Amino acid sequence: MSAPLSASRLLAALKGEGLDVVEVGDWRHHDRNDKGPWGPVHGVVIHHTATSGAKTTVRTCYDGHPDLPGPLCHGVITKDGRVHLVGAGRANHAGLGDADVLRAVIAEKLLPHDDASDADGNRAFYGFECENRGDGHDPWPAVQLTAIAKAAAAVCRAHGWSERSVIGHLEWQPGKVDPRGFPMDRLRELVAERLK
Image (cartoon, rainbow, N blue to C red; front, side):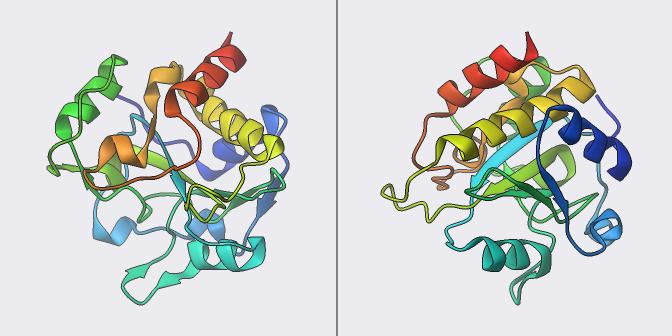
């Protein structure tokens, strides 16, 4: 069980991992904490945005849309490898997912199949949205994949977690397919290498 990082500690952790970080608007005070608690936190969820274009993607993740107010994550990782911080605190990114998966993340064990939506992921996970159409054809540049691994490792390092605390949205919530285009096991290997 971990208390969430403050905005300043999250920023420092990301920069400490060598990331190029962009602070967007009033991200330090941009959250959905009025809709429920933020924390304790247990891991990181990786998403793809199903969008293209960095500027539009970042703005959407900051503002949200009529059916789902922002922030839609904590950081947006664009194709150029930059991390755009858009929220600190509870964010609308993970939604309801499988409590068995949450227990496995907490225990840092192999993930079971996600077949239920009975746990609040917005409370328990940091979220990184990654700029990609998610159609299986849009490429994932090496610089972006490296930044995704660094961002996940930064949060894990700050909390003392292993790579087992990093999951894809498709491993958390039934019916989700993101991130599409790279295997989560490979991403966890990259995170583990950084944490050594």
